[in-house]
Length: 201
Image 1 (cartoon, one colour):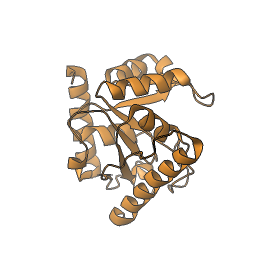
Image 2 (cartoon, one colour):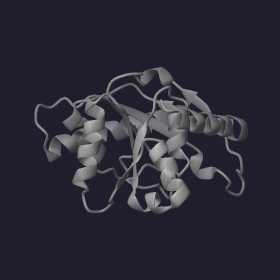
Image 3 (cartoon, helix red, strand yellow):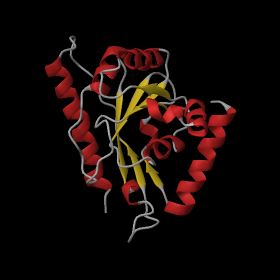
């Protein structure tokens, strides 16, 4: 874990816990070594560092290409082990890069929905996260974030936010096809919904 990553992790941990009374649950479900995908619901731009700052290993993310063109933000994203993806075109290079990172024993954070939920409810998920995990042959940790969509919003300026890391799930089929990927995606999203239902109060 680089010095820059450690600093940003410490900074966001302090920010989340002091301002938003952030709580993390079952962090022990995230293995501290070996390739693994942390797959979460996506409520706001606050999600990636919330998920990352409670885990004692770097989590790399795919981020849309446009963010890397912003001078300071782009540099910070590279410090956080993120890399660009061109959305809407099936960026095979980004998929290969993600699979390579996982096969080298890194941890990837992915949002199966592909974009932030406008309603706060789970949206239809694409098969990208399932495909990457299946190709890399690594487990997936279904992860739920709660209340980040209410940060700095009227009526809940400093909401209590939560992140819950579920138990690992595995791609079990010997073949990678659309039907099996859809089944695995549905399993991941159902586990995320179960976590939301269990911890949302």
